[in-house]
Length: 322
Image (cartoon, rainbow, N blue to C red; front, side, top):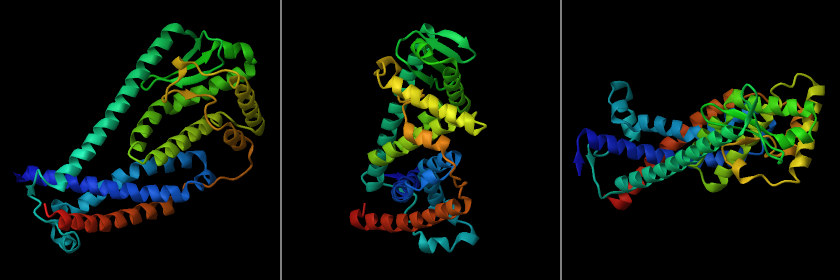
């Protein structure tokens, strides 16, 4: 049993964990309900909405925690909050309680995710360093790998580089190669390998199905953003789409070498080609960021999570009674 400030801190962390789990559940339900409609928005909006999905449980959890915090409720203006958020024995923390068990499980799971992400980053760092030693420099940030397999990708978390194989250069014309290089340079511009790694970390807190779908949608959105990065006319859009098709036909004849496989490598043709071509050639006017809807949605989720956390907390208290 712990008393005082340490007990208060541990009890607040318990509320953080409970609020996070509740918020995660509600965000998952909302995402599953609207996932098919996300494609109706611009690429930049899609990326923002996906980031909002993975970060919302953390934002809502912190908001709910402030709501229940004794520090927040201590002022005269917020005395009325105590009638809703019944804060019991905040300065006492029991080791043999559901509070303790929930903290151990959550932080154990978080450590597992963090270690997995760090190991992936470590392997990727050595993979990129090895590829750089084998490659020859074509231009600034663009390296050529001596390989007959047609491939192009961007890799590196801190200082990313674009890689293109000698086999691809031999099989495609100079215009196609220039389009592919510009595409990969846009990934470098957006720092996509690093963002992909961070996004994967936050997405890992969702269920496997939701996690997989979130990462897939973000990967496609990143590719579509790179496809359109330097497209200024309809003719350029047609050229990029044609290059995508030609590259896909070539790549279909080869299997990707093991040394070029990594979750953190952003490949030119690894994500839904059909969606990318349609995005380039479509005249559809995509929707902008729905600021009002998102703002109201986050507030609504925070309110629902707050009331749910209070109910769940007291239900568990009653069930276990410490």
